[in-house]
Amino acid sequence: MRNRMDAPYLREFQDRVARQAAAFPGDFFLAAPQRTPAVALTFDDGPDAACTPRLLDLLRGAGARATFFVVGVRARRYPEMVRRMKAEGHEIGAHGWVHQRMDLMGASTFATHVEQSQALLSEISGALPVLFRPPYGSLGDDDVAVLAKRKIRVVNWSVDSFDWREGYDDPERITKTVLDLAHPGAIILFHCSQEHDATLRALPRIIDTLRRRGYALRAVSELLPPPRSAPRNLPPPVRGSSSIER
Ligand SMILES: [Zn+2]
Image 1: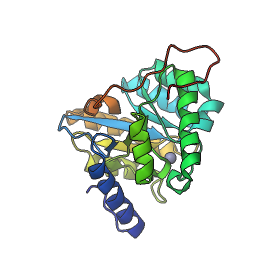
Image 2: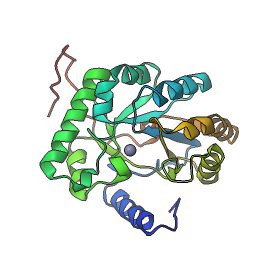
Image 3: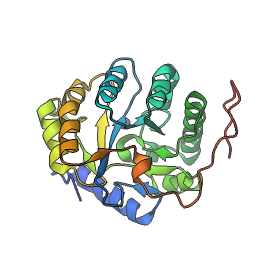
């Protein structure tokens, strides 16, 4: 498994998600299963008014498509950023209603948070998200099953930039971590919220180098196999409505 680190909590985490990916094929992904020469850049924890617009400018300048996993309450605060992500061709997935460990919530709180965030994101972007990344990558097996029933696929990552980790506020270190570990079908984890300046500074070289190595930059859904059945789409959007299909 990639990014195996010395910290015991990371080893335990990686063992758990590897088990979940094996237990829920088609519903829980760490990487794209096919060996296409493409990777997905993913950005968690937005939107905000500081990092998100700079990141969108950077991606537009590079002509690169990415996937954003957005937090419900932050999307509610900065809906124009979500609309801009969508308008500029990026994919939008959900990252919880608030940024909390969802595997530690009760089942009904979990369901409510999923529901609220799906409803809000579909209202803002006009499309029901089909991808979900839990805060901290942590979900219980029951939670994965609940999402699978709703045709929402869980997407963690195979390459962690570690831009969240102490000591990684250095663009060189983030760049080296990602480029050392990149592989065909990689889903690469980054963060974009107030304090991720180093991520933004690392990205131009990461993007250039990945492309020089022959990788295309794709949205996560473009790399995953087609869902076993069609995602449940919303009925045509009704202005001001936040109802979603069950
Ligand atoms: Zn997060």
